[in-house]
Amino acid sequence: MRTLLDSLQWAFFLLTGGLVAPIVVAAAFQLSDAETISLLQRTLTVIGVSSLLQVTLGHKLPILEGPAGVWWGVFILLAANLTPGSSGAELLRQMEMGLLLGGVVILLLSFFHIIRHLKKLFTPVVTGTYLLLLIFQFSSPIVKGILGVGYKDPYIHASIAVPAIATLLLTFLCGRSKTAWLRNYSALIGIAAGYGLFLLLGQIPALPKLPDSAVLIPQLFAWGAPLFDSGITLTTLVITLPLLINMIAAIVVMEKTIGIEPVDRYRRSGIVMGINQMLSGAFSAVGCVSNSHTAGFVASTRMTKRLPFIIGCLLLIIAGFFPFLTAALASVPVPVAFAVIFYSFAHLLSAGLKELGAVLQNEKKLTIVAFSLFAGVGSMFIPAASLAVLPDVLKPILNNGLVVGVLASIVLEQAWQFKDSLSSGSGFSSWRRKHSPIERSAGHAVNDQSVL
Image (cartoon, rainbow, N blue to C red; front, side, top):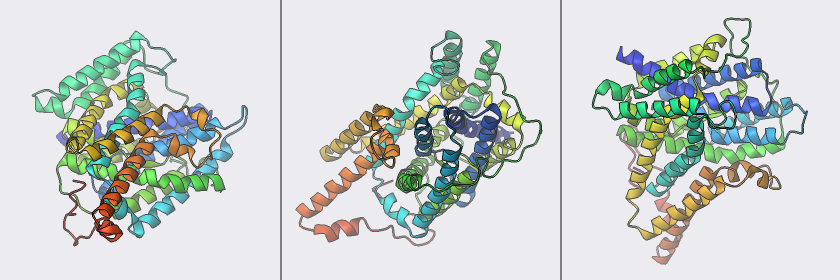
């Protein structure tokens, strides 16, 4: 019974990770109800398959593979550039090709062990900065979502905000309860109670018109044959770095949360991630990446075993074959989903503060953190329209405060360490040796105290 409940809880968590992106992308490209349901169906399938591949063949950790913010951002930016009345069909076909090429690039980087070099950059300074910026980036949509902003209209309504806040408080109280089963199933209890409250108040959205077929196999290249575009290809090459940063950070944080010894799982993870990007392109969905906030969910529910996660992935994949089931799952009110994951993000914020606690007494590291947070948070408030005059290849980076802040922390810390090595007289060779690829024997844990 416990495995079944854990699996259901994982399935709903995986669902919340895939609800928002396809709906927003569908709205941006003005897709019909049938096309939106089809996109949601394909997205859930890709999330389930991608997460299943990673937990069995990749990093082998229970981490949600959800729509990546950088890919999501590219879709929105492309839609914003459409002229009124024009079709985005050609752009969507170009995005299919971009996802396929992105997968190939990540596969090559993984085969040639480039990810090992990137992993060495994830010191407590970078990891802590990443976690705080992740919280800052998601805090606005989560709070707005709980208050019901954009659920039906751009305004706050008590009939939506009050039951959502009640769901949040119930999830928090269950998560802090001394009763083990209440703690472990706080998310599932919150979703069930929140859905019930919204149902009583008549705030459940009506199901869209469904296809005639009861069973519908997710369609390959639903937007048409992939179409090459040099601009999107260049953008794809640039955003592979943020994608890899997200993957590495998610693994590092989950290893800490579960309390296991770090092992060199990055090459396998990168290979599977490349395959997952290609799957997203083939199934015309938003590209997926490992989501760091899964660690907060695991910390709040104490679900560390892989079997329930695997079953949860299978449930999501099965749901993707039944349009009615997909639509029914999608009827879970967005404010309820945000209210439940609020508690998980609170745990993640605690992890970020603890990560930075070790560097508070070091003035140099504290300066790097302060500068990076300032740059990252400031970038979050730059209007997307103000980037219109910049090259398209830079927009997904500069429009993402998380990426700006993390890149700033990496560059500053490495530059400072290089400067210190020159000042000490050891020179470039010492700095290079310090940042050589991870060396380890097969089956042994990585000896990398700078990360964990």
